[in-house]
Image 1 (cartoon, protein in one colour):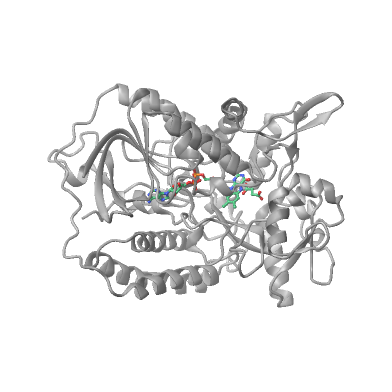
Image 2: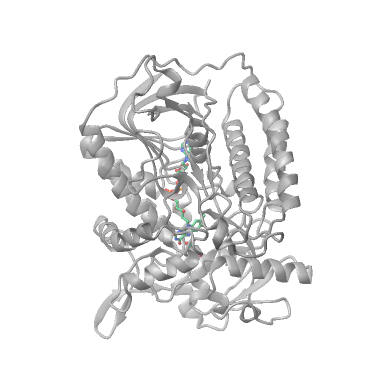
Length: 541
Ligand code: FAD
Ligand code: SIN
């Protein structure tokens, strides 16, 4: 089936939904999302959103903290812009009904601002410890009430449709243009052609490339892989943020224990009960995440233990239950009462600081293709994201991208050439799904073991050789068999794994989240720059 729309949005997290609400008055909107509409990293965000919301805080301090965390690679003008535009976007969420937590100060009510690693001030606005769930709920509710927006659940975008692939006449301004995407309807097993004046990649992060991750299953880097295949620049994907504290439990699927818990006095300890972060950083347990994750990694390698402990049991139990109801309840289900005992925790892949390169309006290298949220590389995070700056970035960029896209759609409209339907080639039903699940597992394991918190040249080279072989195998399999969600995602995690490895190999220093034991120092003279990768070739059928 061919579906024509003004705006095609790939993803229903904070970036996709907030963009949809803003563009809807100017045209028809289709949101495709590969599971149910709520399923996104956004829905699991705990800590909150960083923004200057108090007279005791200032833009200058938020900017400074972001730049320090970013370790020399943030684009300063972007940091300034995002920080300064943040409060207006938060006001919008408040007006839309997000119930941020308040506290009493004397007889006045004010926002209860949380503290997280790397922040010099309390500036995390939150809804208890399930901020993302509340934001997602409100945004989905608003989108569902808007008749101009249609959500296609269980629809997974496979590849972008670009002008250079199909038009008889090539783009005149030398820039390729995006005309939409091929999208697989998972429940019906058919591929639809979505043609759009404007396409937004809002498909989130890449956590599932790693064996252990805080991310939900949707985070397979599809947007980054699609943009790369279409020829857009990808930058800085070697900067993978490992969250220091995910619950260590066979059934917990790496449930996140928010940094806000350390912000309220939680202490990391060895199995002996000895706190250890003071050895590594003056900010101790609230040091930037890369430092905390690496310190835990080092302690685990030294001791041979499986996990370290996170202890908040010394705080008042009433306060803990009120401030962290979600974490308290979830840990109790796994047998840990956090008001009484410390929790076993380990680091896990959490956030990709790089992605599809965009300008300050969220525009990519490909005309009429925008990217926002975790999929994008805007220049805000540099070599390490400051905690709770990602929801903020998604809001600011969705707003800016919407403004630009509206302007664009009011101008010239694309006349599409005839686009062929998806060609399954000689594909047949696969009776070898074991190959797909084996390759999934192999990629995730090799990324965890070889391209993890600390890397070396030898490990990266080994990983690169393995991935090249797997890529060959997946390519063959992909064209021989009928597409499934697992196969589409496998193809994408393989591309993203390769991009991470190639970016990591290019960076001959250690900076921010990237730590290579063969280049243990920062090299400002030669390496203070983004790592950019382009392919420029299309793999659409
Ligand atoms: P997402 O919210 O991940 O949404 C992506 C959407 O794209 C999903 O709907 C998905 O189904 C869809 N999708 C993906 N691929 C396709 C495809 N091929 N076709 C169709 N649909 C597709 N950040 C903060 O700032 N503060 C926090 O407190 C915080 N806590 C976090 C806690 C956890 C457990 C996690 C995992 C992350 C946290 N983060 C936090 C990071 C933050 O939540 C994410 O970076 C942010 O939500 C990303 O939003 P997004 O809209 O870009 O993507
Ligand atoms: C957390 O709550 O610790 C996650 C915050 C973030 O990833 O920004």
